[in-house]
Length: 507
Image 1 (cartoon, rainbow, N blue to C red):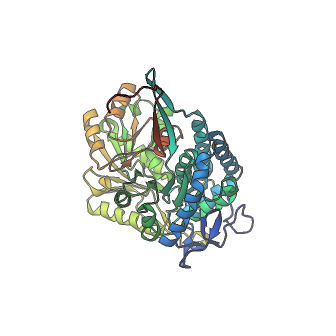
Image 2 (image 1 turned 90 degrees about the horizontal axis):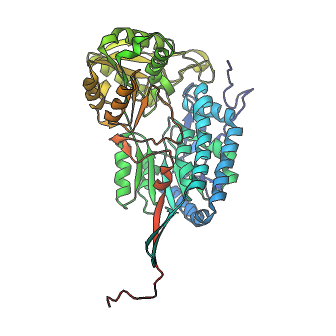
Image 3 (image 1 turned 90 degrees about the vertical axis):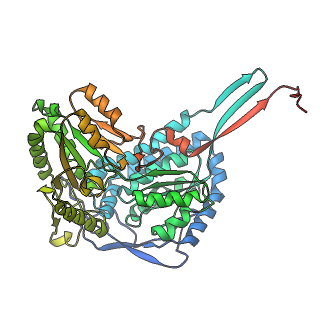
């Protein structure tokens, strides 16, 4: 196991700058109003850098730069754009370890996750969209011997992207890779809780892109996000975050009739049928790991499997084993590769989680494990830590219905297939779900019956670049990943051409 030194300390492999301005037109630009805000590390609650506090003036300057760069980038040959994306992937991969440490320090997540998942997936997304871009083709339809319809995919132009704090670098890759592949220029606003790791990454790859193709405006939602999303100068708004904010983003964009992609909240069911317990084998062990997946990334995942539904035939046995697996999760310093659960991303998020622990108890739910804030001494003092928590209750409780965004699991039982589907779908959300069974007929039927954009079957928390991701119901509009994302960042141009010299004869 490895214990990394904190960024900027003696022996560290990476250092943050003391201040980050906006990145506009290929250079760092101070905020128009001269204001900055501190960025604390969740590891110890202490600020490690300061960030430019953007406003509408900064957004306008970034849009100026993006509009200046967009035509040239759109005309850049497909093969060249794909090569740029591959170079970004290579550069990111060459600095993967440093970026993984930097992101863990800013977000609080265990470095084992950033090393094994966040950064490798970010690399792969750039490579994937470089590949599918090269394979994309238009179409030709011969309407008759003299009339042909040509269809070309053209970039939208300048797009706005607003990303969340739970996966700072991966969410940036999810947004940037398809937008850049499709030929757009971008103005991106990172979450105010985690802007610094994105700037550190940008410092490694900025020279690979023409100035103005990617612009970053830091700041808070009302001050920077709202003027960006409501600007008539953007052709599309892509947002990942909570559902309440998504409604506002949609409202802002609608004022100018701009399309949106919204990847929003979730309350994902994780369903365990009785046959999981039929044998004590690798599959049962895998399913128990799937039960504990609610603690991945400290539960700060929109698809967190935060509702466990267990069939009543083996309810007690599976639940007891799931609690034991959860209690084996190793807490500790996020920069230690042995650590399995780190710090929540912010003090606000920590307080929200603890408030839901109180709500669950007031509702009469039973705490089976956890439920307490963890307060360390020494170098972790002041950090934002909480125990993985499992409640037992029923699906009408708030802890079953509302997104907590922390390592909190609500467990209940079901009697048969129909009961499982009814409970699973009894939610405002429909982003993800998990199904665990040895019977593939049951697995298929459940996957089709569950109202969610992604149903993991005998697995969970896999996010490959070539699988479409997005929500049903109040979990969003549109999709992320997969080659269909190119369509989300392009518009279809039809040339309807007559090669006949003859007139129609109508006039």
